[in-house]
Image (tube, rainbow, N blue to C red; front, side, top):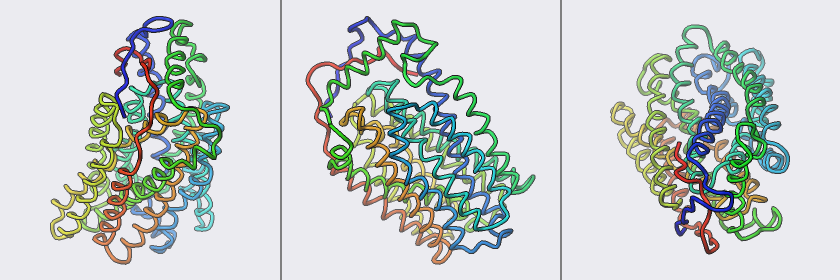
Length: 440
């Protein structure tokens, strides 16, 4: 995609660095915390099951894998309705109620005594969390221009690896100090409390923000409107969702998510089985890949925004993940520490491209349909997450971690190759308005 020129001054005058600083200081922390809580409450299941849930409820390996994966069925079904509501109604209202409900469903995992009810709870947790990624990406597109969006998206999605990083360490020791039941309860309550902070602080668009003056509101709204005029119009969801790029990206993201969620849900179990460490040390080791991933995400998104290219910051990283998984498989459990280093690399390179990837769709589809397209792609990611969480758990329980690594490596390889089929978007002629020096 050709680089866009930056115009620091047009229309109502320059967008000051103070304005840019305000957006990064207010919008980004709110987005990061919200997604962090969502990721905490969907991902701590893997540590709960390793810490005694499966044993106490007499859950088989197959049922355990299904419980981990059921979240994604609910997540899949409500992506596009959530995106439509967020774009045409209010992100603020939608996320408030989702926070309250997912906090309740997440905490309930610690008190439910029956397997059947736990299946229902995991599904409903997926339903209410379905809104998070499409709604928050739409939210950021209302506040940040294309030359900032890779970084803005990355700071949002950093809630994923950073949360898993501290969750892996804290949750493991929390289970050791109390129980898996109290871990679920104590980690579900913060989402309910945060809902009220979110409702008080968030404004859906710059024009609604009390912390911007009228000139600042006009400047950023004009900048975003100018970008929209450069994108060819698309009438209706059918044309947008049936476009070649969106279809390819949907399949590609499903395969990518097989690797990511297989890794997230079953890394603690794989490490515990291979290292023979206790749950506390297992949690600490499971945190390491996510610390490296967070650094990789920031660096890659910065380079992508500077170059305005997206694809080249996606497929090479997925190919590297393929190689790392395969080499970890070849080493086997007899070389635990070297295999673990390769798992750290695999985790980092799978996460690194998220910011550029989700900045791509709003650059070739206009705002009236880009949110639904993101939701469709992310819903296919949910299907991939279901397959990753279920199949990797099943393979790990029946054929061992080596076969699980091969499965994840194959999915990532095809995902990397599919990214090469995505066509670069056509852009209009002329300059696009961007905030001056808009760095956090």
